[in-house]
Length: 94
Image 1 (cartoon, rainbow, N blue to C red):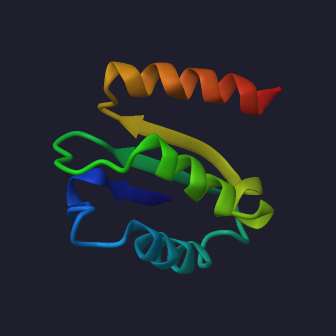
Image 2: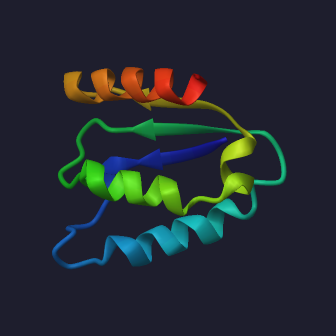
């Protein structure tokens, strides 16, 4: 299980989120060979990455990272996040 707390994200004006993504991918290497679950806590997040960055980050993950993800849980999502995840979930399933 991989737990990601959005409340710990740094200010995007002082930290390059693309470099942060490289660090996340490096840490994911420990998990990608086996089934894993991602839990994202969004409550209390002062800085959230934009949807464009999230889309770009998802596209950067090759098949090895995506194929073994069994579940993604978003804890305390906003209404906008709920709608977006429902739409994306339907597209990915088909």
